[in-house]
Image 1 (cartoon, one colour):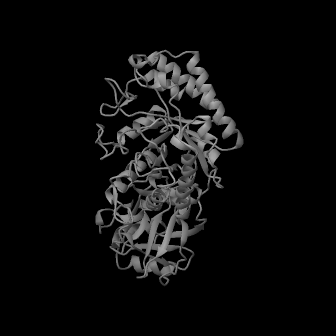
Image 2 (cartoon, helix red, strand yellow):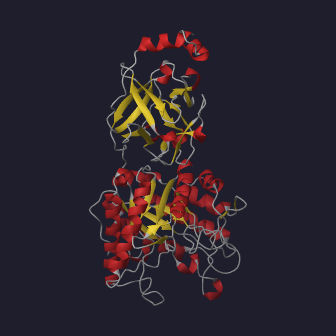
Image 3 (cartoon, rainbow, N blue to C red):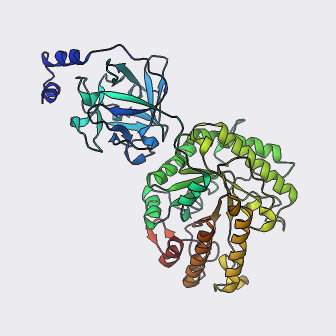
Length: 506
């Protein structure tokens, strides 16, 4: 009661007495590193709400767990102040809206170096510290001296109560890591945000609406556990260093954060980039650009959790427009292996959580056929998985009936699915190398029952072996062509519920 009265009255008699009673110390020299910030009053830790990745996510207190959203990287600035960065997102502890009043809210936000993101950390000679904002001089506290999970963190004039004191508990900089096999086992059935960030010329250039948070949340609500976000970087970088447009990189991160906020595993890649040419003649140029792009992407996302996954390339091909485009040659296979290693080296070199990030590598054209998968070179790296695509058989999945295609799912389709997955199992899964079927599906030919039967069989076979599948959805429907829509994004409707059910619960 006395503490609360002191805070509310802020009078000249009560406040100095209380400060003296706990003892004032000099500005601390805190060792840079990763810490839990443990509140003295509640014994709970400073936490970014719901593991959120986006700018503006609230900061509160929660009981201690293993999440990186409770780990804070403290680094000293040249002026004697500190930055306090959320380990899961790389974003800074921030005074929301530059509010200088008592009760100012705290969030995470991209670091800009402003005074509302700089902090003084002072020892009060009892193993606890007060943390005050350079901007306002007010101290970080838990609102109303609350002890419950979810109580808000805010700023208030320093009055010396236990709710304004923090213990800095040092923790290992490395996140509790999962193996490649463990991650793949949790990825479940996945869905592709097709023809969107991979659309040449911009996100809406191929007829899709701008992606909204509700769309990503709908994917998660439907029961999918993974989302693949194909990204085309061509047209979004320039200069001798191939510098990525900051606005484009920020947009990619925004969608990644939408997905992580929905507790989805997320895959991003290099997709329709025509500068990727797997030939000896183009190997050096392709490698140079690839290294520049992945070094920037890896740096941007190195603090994101292991729920973010990188895929080095999408369907890398040469000989375009010829019969060899989808089959390739030994030369093409060997250069794809080189490009995969170039990308992997850049990702690992960036450090942070990228040291233990799962990286997917494809063979030539991401082909699932025996000739191509036999020539995939497996890097000396425990955190990799094979990326492949399986629109099989083509006559059922994509070829129009008028052009000789088939709309009936029967034993012929089953036999080819078995062949593909058995080969992948024999070459990789049975040898401890996970596989992700990054694209598959079937176009609409007015045969939804057969497509649902196909989906159930395909997914069941994959589940039996332990291969993750990520169905292709480009939001296209009507007319001839690649009509892979399962989810109507603009109207937030899943229009082939039987097919989706066959994928989620085969």
